Amino acid sequence: MVRVLQKEYLRRSLIEYFGNKGYEKTFNICAYPPSLMDLSEQPFSNKSIEVAFNIEDIDLVDNSVKVAWNVFVLGNKRIFLGYTNHQNFTDIKNSKNTIKDYNGPITINKIIEFIIEFLGNSNQIFDINRKPTNNSFVNKPLISKY
Image 1 (tube, rainbow, N blue to C red):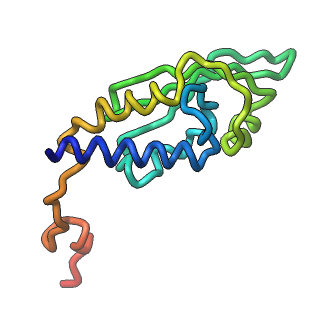
Image 2: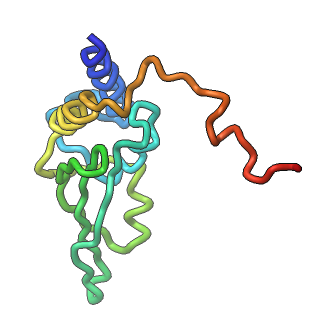
């Protein structure tokens, strides 16, 4: 029962996330990868989702950059989002808040299914009974007064 609730929570949170990004009409389109850079900062991800990019090709003549994009879940589960082309390195950072007409290999529905498949079945992410303890190292000072 807990797994079902975890998956439903993830599904609803991801639908809300992509809806807030401007993809509310349909999820059968491809998400523009730079717009997903804040996915790991969402409360439902618990820092277990990471959108990572690597530079695939740099053309110094045209001053263009080809970037490959991946989503990692739990550190080692990966889905390839595709390639984007940018005029320079700052264009990568500036394009994170925009949605462009992008035709990649993975739709938003597939991204949602991928994240739910691995994160929804994880024991380390959702622990409904977990409560903060007073004896954790976070609440102790690094250096004792005495």
